[in-house]
Amino acid sequence: MTAFERSMIQLKVYYHSGLVPSPLHYPILGTRLLQLLVENRMAEFHNELELLPEQSRQDPNVAFAVKLEQYLMEGTYNKVLEARANVPNPFFRFFLAQLLQTVRENIADCAEVAYQCLTLQDAQQLLIFDSAAELSTYIQEEKPEWVVRDGRVWFKAPEKSLGASDIPSLRLVGETLAYATELDRIV
Image 1 (cartoon, one colour):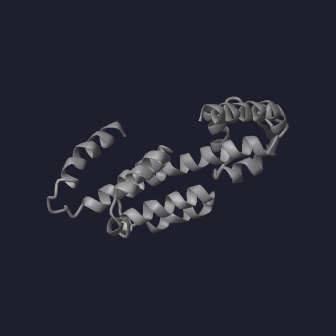
Image 2 (cartoon, one colour; image 1 turned 120 degrees about the horizontal axis):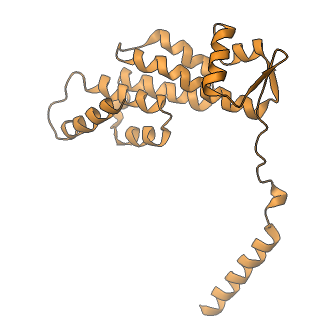
């Protein structure tokens, strides 16, 4: 991945130099966008996308990556998996295999917050594993804080987040009004 990223940085010089575009220009741009999706670097994905002219976004290679990003943002992970069957370029297959892992991580993060526990069968289905052994390996390697007991996967208790009652709103409003009054006196 590091070598690919380094190569992309070197190629950018040529893509923005006014030279005649290479026939591989759009496939490489689409591959770069997929790499950013796989690494869950959404801010950089959107930065790269903003730098592209509108005509570049219409290319099937770039549009494919944009569509995958849309599916990820919507949480329609089944469409991400279905998209693997309609790859516009063979370069994308490597990154799409890794995108499944990114999807699993997103689902696992949501499941930890949404559920206290799941049956092993439900967890296997939710995390898109073909076998219980794959799920077990995933838990051991990626989520050691999860506990498997009595045919269930128990998630760690979510950390308590601040609620509306924890924010000292009356004090903040008072301070803001005091600042406004002081500013009014100065002006």
